[in-house]
Structures are given as structure tokens and as C-alpha cells.
Amino acid sequence: MQLVHPNGGNLTLVQLERETGSSARFSGQIWVSGTFVAQWPGGVKTKVKAPEYLLVPDKQSKAVLPYFVLKEPPYFNRYPVDVIDLENGEAALRMTVSGEKVDQLLNRKTRVVRATGRFLVESYIVGVECDAPWARAVLVRTQLPSQLAIVHQMVPERC
Picture (cartoon, rainbow, N blue to C red):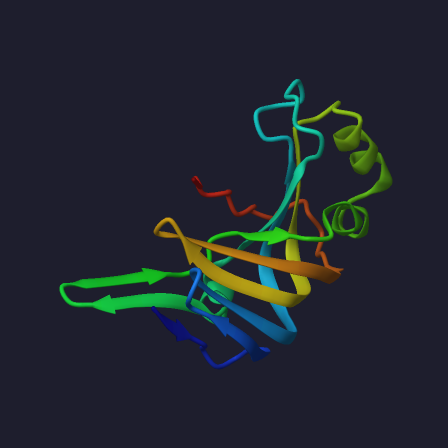
């Protein structure tokens, strides 16, 4: 596995792990455009104790986020980041959507809330496990335009 670190981000590689799997930890911050999604996996009646908090980057942000590539002939697989799991989920929810929507989600009155805009993240970690990419980060700040005419990014299927 090779790490691809595109230009355009303010991330500095801190640790590269290849023995137990491929992962890379970065310091610094980067703005990611896309959609914040907080949802109850399986619906509001699920026994899951907390919602999942995700950031789905748009095409331009995917192009500047670090990712892994497998180059072992005859294989050539790219593992770009499709979803970033947010480690400070409830805090990210509270800084992204209104108090009313926070209450609706946490009280299981709605299954999902979304907001599209720009999101400043730090403590970015990226990796590949079971032939699937994964990423985690901490949401620091949001910039949300009027949500009236925004098209949200959809959460891709994951294993």
C-alpha cells in the first residue's frame, strides 16, 4: 500500500502504520466541502445507543484528501475516502444543526439530519481494512450557506 497525499491540504503526516493494516495519522486542519449526516443506522427503533455522525466529502474535497493505493501487479486499486466518521459526533451535531433538529434526532423523533457546507476537520486518520477505505476526524468548525437550494451528498454503502 502506498499513501497518496495530494497537494491542497494543510495536513502533515505524523504516523504511517503498515504492520497491522494500512493507516496514516495527520496533524493540521483541512476544510472539507460536503454533507454532514447524523443518523440512526437501522432506524429510530434500533437498539443502537448512539447515532452515527458522518461527513460525506464532495468530489473536490475527495481530490485533496490523503488516501491509499495498492500497486501490486496485476492489481491496482485506489481507496479514496468516501465517508469520514466524526469522533466528536454529538458536539459536531450541535455546531452544525439547530437545537430543534438536535432534539428531534437524539429523542428518536427523526432518523436522519443533514447539512451541506464547508467543515473544518483536524486529527485526520485514513486507512484501509478488509479492502475498504475508512477515515476519521474531529469536526472543529462549520460554514453553512442557506440550506434551501442545497443538494446533499448521499452516504455511500459501507461494509
